[in-house]
Image 1: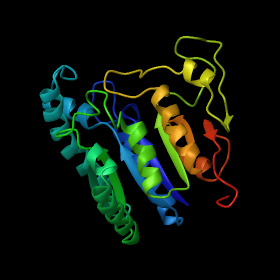
Image 2 (image 1 turned 120 degrees about the vertical axis):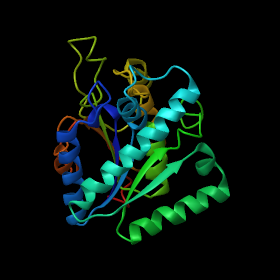
Image 3 (image 1 turned 90 degrees about the vertical axis):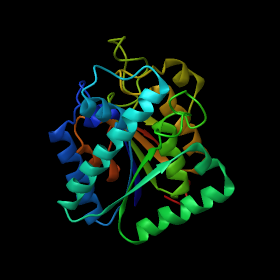
Image 4 (image 1 turned 180 degrees about the vertical axis):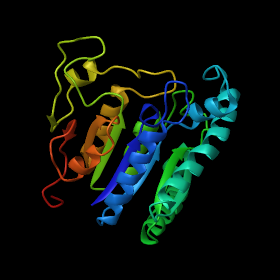
Length: 262
């Protein structure tokens, strides 16, 4: 199975922006083990700005775009270094890919992106993908790509993936925002994106995250057209990925795979 794992900021950092070392170690170990089992793994990882804030010892996320770009430049170095070291500990090599909207929407650049992505997989490397926040402002301004929820769906389509898993701060799609409504119930299985779901979607829960459930549902809409499954689940326990890949009920599964792929 070819699996894209989207890792939200809250999954691998504390509220301070500093790395959540224990969770990061479990995550990388689990992904390395899934690769050892024969799966192809691609990672779309947030947290560059959060880690830059932590490394620069700032009091919070900068309010201005140049400040966030500079913070992302520092944080991205730290982020890829950690992924490189942790995966190397388990015998795997990573390759960094920083993308902009033009890389996806320009026909020529998209072709080059696909060629690089597939060659990395052929070579057995694990692509670590993020938007190039140090030069692109579409994510920072809420523009074309949107955030890493949308980017991960774009990557899943480009890579012809079987599954996209989003690790986030909420363990799935609920009937209402569970942070505000104690009666909200988890929806374990979805076969169609409805307006009711979109209306119940909330925003991000932390200072450093840019996405929310609405952007995840928009990503699901994109995958629905391509026949690619998606799972939203909590990132607090990365070992749940074993259950997700095995097809067991974890979080919310958006079942879109066409019969010829099943």
